[in-house]
Image (cartoon, rainbow, N blue to C red; front, side, top):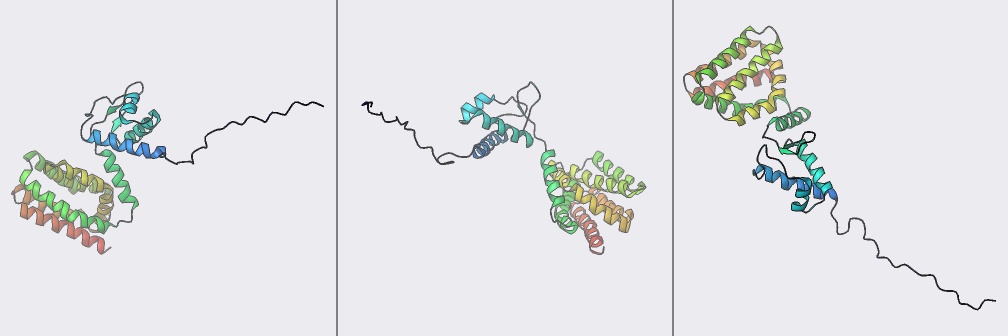
Length: 246
């Protein structure tokens, strides 16, 4: 019989693992914060339009996050239209472009529970002010564009052509204000406005729309903002009544 003592098995002492998430933010939080910080820097022109963005390594070092977080944040910024990339080239700051905002808001308005009467309520104050400002600021060339839009409306042989010409007249007025924000706001409403125009033009014909346009145009030509505002309000109130009577 062996008299040697059996040696106890050695135990490996390891630190207990921390509970999941304890003391550590989820990566999504880091991505969100990184996107927010970079977005603010782009908006404040810390990175100018057309300028190359710092490398992943540089951003990782300056922001104190992993390169994986930087890559995910960059994908979000690309989707938002703030930066652009092309194969084999570094990311650059994209010049400001309202298309992304317009598309996003337009989609939301079309999907939401918004009636065409809701649209008219928004157009009343917005477009009456557009008409008033246009009466101060429209150039002869812009007035000629309004005339041409009305001529296209008068000669339109289909509802779709009439709708397009109708919208072009209102777009010309917005452009004549000299304030690009008005054009952007109308662009976000354009799909709803097309639906509204189809209904009202099909119901009352283009002559009613032309009468309203001509009254607005006359006030613009006379440089009379009060008359332009009143003419646009009257024009839109007729459209509202047509929608209510449907």
